[in-house]
Length: 350
Image (cartoon, rainbow, N blue to C red; front, side, top):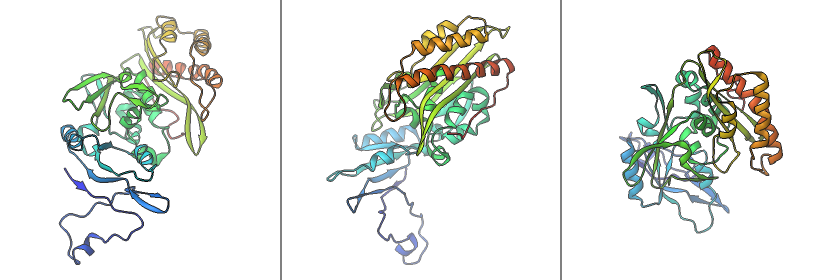
């Protein structure tokens, strides 16, 4: 486990060579951007120590050592911005614990018919993964529209879930895929639980990032006659703000004419990500026709009650977009399940 102290922007910091009188040091010093934040013309340190554990157990031990004064970090695209909102008298965080060095949290693999995705896997890695595209196409499509390319290169799927926002694109697809999340709790228990149990409210997670570790996710690989799809409507405003996202997983019968099973997640509709259970029930076991899809999409518009947001869209507008999205996503998922060909669409379009 390595430890680094912060370097301060605005001051000339001697290079490692300069500090050793011209001799090459044994270990080069790691420069960490974002260690300080300007506050009324002065520089304020954001953290004191930086750790890179190699295992989940090491990460938990490191968090415990700081007794609630350390935070987990992976991509840091949300955390570092939040940390820069410092006030006079605020003390820097005692430590950051970087889990991108934990091997099992950065892998994508298939075992026993299940696809495993580590919580520290970046959105770009998911987009580029042939395994995820084949077995969980909707996850590629949702991760492929998160932020811009620079954000996707460092932001992680675990961060998307841990931030606990109901509009999270990756979260929406995970719910539709019926995913479980693996959590290593600070009390020593490590368990799998439905990903929906991570959420307590908008921005409120069951996990404490000062004590617990979100390790990864798993879900069934799509088999023959199964497929998924995701699309969203967004509002360009500096960055692409999602207005509404829709992920669908379908399972067809052997004739490929009947919806044997289905999961639909449309977010944000509630305070936490949820399945559209009533809409699913109206489709399950039905013969697939264009008229059925149009009817159910129209009914969903009236059944679901999305939240209003002054930054994104009104509840009324979102209700109309529910019908629009279902009319796009449901036929796409059915087409993929029938053909057996799943190629992600819209990746990188924000």
